[in-house]
Image 1 (cartoon, each protein chain N blue to C red):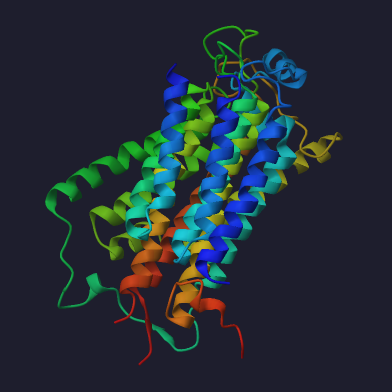
Image 2 (spheres, rainbow over the protein chains, first blue to last red; image 1 turned 90 degrees about the horizontal axis):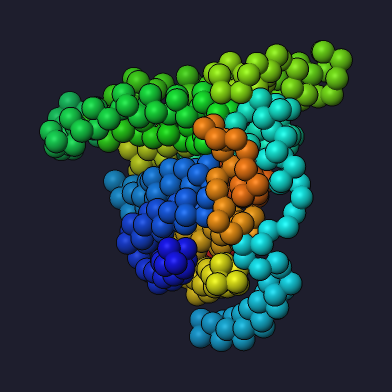
Length: 77
Length: 251
Length: 114
């Protein structure tokens, strides 16, 4: 039952990531999507993958997106 | 083709692709009835053969260590790609970052953020080192721990200024760590050749499962990968930050 | 429940592909590409699952027959970290494209003509 709920959350989050057209908003939604995927991996008895996905998808990836956006939006003097 | 036409073409072919995909998934075993024998054999024989209790790390660094070597060099190539893409182009110059100028125009982060960030740097480094070193016993290993350690460097930047980040993690040290990690993983395999068996064979004494010094070369490979991943992520973070704060187009 | 994880993996891949096809911003496109990559992780992990499964870590209990498959987990683990690094490289390409052409719209970036 828990697995069905988390799978539903994954499907909804993926749709939310694509539907957020502004990259700044999308970075935040991508962080949530990474966290939900990490929860999915923990529920599926995969702790190594869950740890990896949580750290990478919720922290490192949105960070790179934000840094690229900062350069593109505000880089020119 | 216009955007509307492109979307309609995609929806049409996407429906066909979805049908093929779902038809192929019908041929998979039902969810929860995994039947492959290889996984069961590894689960049963990982403790007697390699004295590790975390089977996934044993697969990553021993049974299928060659795949990890390839993945490590994909990571290395991507980091080299970022470095060469974000090099100074013709017509750009470096200027001192905003927070280094004499008349500071950038607001410092608030006291709460600074205190929380600096307070968390120590525990993050500790957790990262723990995850890297205990990769052969509990879930973890070089990949996860390396990213956690790179996050600690990010915390330093968030809670203070870019100049502090450069002092704590100078570029030369980060690049050296990354290169050292990638090279160590490749050279550790040579121990097997020197001993007279295959490349990347686990030749160090195996110890007993559950102890820190056990499982032969697996903790050493974990540390090498952790070093390389930390250096890689920290390097990419520094490159992006440098682009944003330091590189300016020459007028 | 028998095929639900596979259907979710297919749905995530198609949603990501739709995002790539109809994207108007290079950075949005790169994030949708990472969504497509994540659908393969979901598929791999759900293939290796066993009913009533336990994690393949035996630090505090003897090896049981109910532990899920560790090989797909090993594949997915390295894939996650390396995929994020490649995504960062794609973002660097997007940044340089913006510097060169002044816009991130894929429509306007068609001009590779000399």
